[in-house]
Amino acid sequence: MEVVLRRLDETLLVQCKRWRHVVDVELVAQLYGAINDIEAHGAIFVTSSDYTSDAIAFAPGKPIKLVDGRELIELLRQVQRNADRNSSTGFIQSSGPRSISKLPRSQ
Image (cartoon, rainbow, N blue to C red):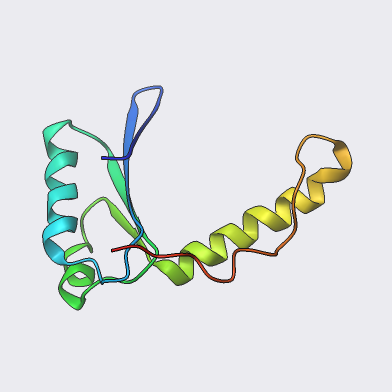
């Protein structure tokens, strides 16, 4: 598990994989097991690649959000746009949209 987020009485698990290969159902099932083991409220599985059809079919009805590479890039772009809007306040400095079009992948 990469990240365990806690707020008040809620716990959220975050698993991240920067892979060239697709994430299979076994890894998503392991995350689901971790939710139950530590009595978390849910989980987010983030990958720079994609999920197998079995992994995608496993998640519905469970407190698991699957984020693939395309959605991850869109989320990063949204954060960058918000940072660009807020940079005039001096709170957040953005380097611009230069390096999020392609994420490096390992494995």
